[in-house]
Image 1 (tube, helix red, strand yellow):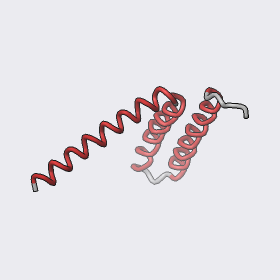
Image 2 (cartoon, helix red, strand yellow):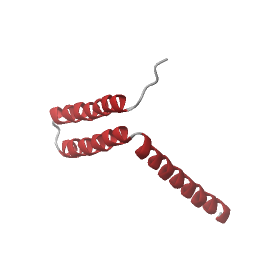
Image 3 (cartoon, one colour):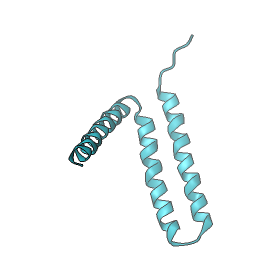
Image 4 (cartoon, helix red, strand yellow):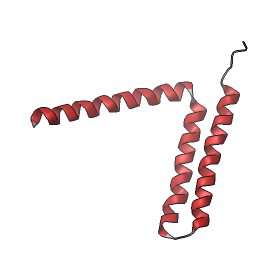
Length: 87
């Protein structure tokens, strides 16, 4: 049992370290995509959490639209700032 718990602990640490390394890489190489993801998460939480308290479908639909809009805007921004090679 101790070996299993030690394996779970070491695996958890390894996953966390890899996630931090991936996030650092994304922050350096794709800041527009990270910004879009953060904005999407904030808008999604700001709309969906209150929508869970009420049965208002319009609020949930607005949340989905805002979430998708942020992702699309982030992708458009990334496409503008990411250099493309002409071949």
